[in-house]
Length: 355
Image (cartoon, rainbow, N blue to C red):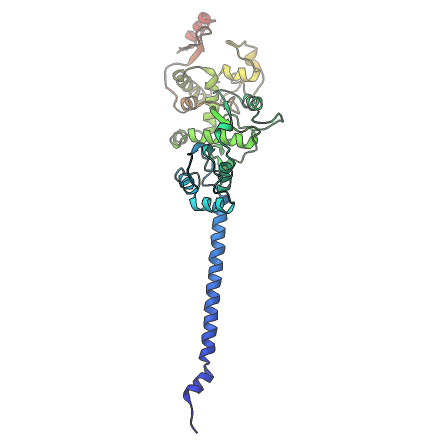
């Protein structure tokens, strides 16, 4: 009997069938791999689309020139670190069918806006020119800020509260006691807002500005002194109303921090003005006896909250106090000049002279 070895081997090991199975499995692996890669790319696209580049960044003006195309705009947004991926921006605008809808002009953008928010703003042409200008001076309270926002039509007449903000995005708020009050952090400056803005967006814009102005160097200095940002903001809010010039504020800052260290009352007229809601050149003894946690004649140390929103120069005065031999001061009601004295007796004589 003759044996055909080739046929026997093919019978035991069906090569053609095995090849077919192998090819099918390889094809399945390739298809599965492609699907996995496609899903991964889709997830990455969605993540980049809805995830801001960073949190709590300050606002900046982004300019689109006439004639700039989608690719140029996307590239500039990436260079300015407003978005993380220019291609995600390009693909999104293309899929929306709005490649020809990006409008030239000046836009107020931040890196804590996601790509969808940035794209929609540019597509809708919401430029700064269409916004309302609002200026908030140093030393204004949150109430004054709110009244100005309502007056300009930026927010509605409904009662708003400046506390519906997550502190996660703003690390400088972490040492602030839990509670609604953000007074002290709504940075005094000139802003542009849309009419009918959401109050949260208004507050975020002002907080971002505070975060930009309080540089890392200033934060490091505060930490090195063993103080908190919150303490500095409270002190600055007092200095803002206590004296006029930056030089005098630095001197008064030295006096006040020394009083706190010595467990001596600050005796700040600015805090009495806050309690009474009335500004005077001189407060009576009865005024200084009013019961309040903000009365620094009766209570030792800083008041529990900032009494206004201080400016950068005053915040710097609180961080960098000037050490002098002065222990007391008053303000000349005629000139506004600060009169310093070293002793209590000299201070008493100045009171007699200027009041």
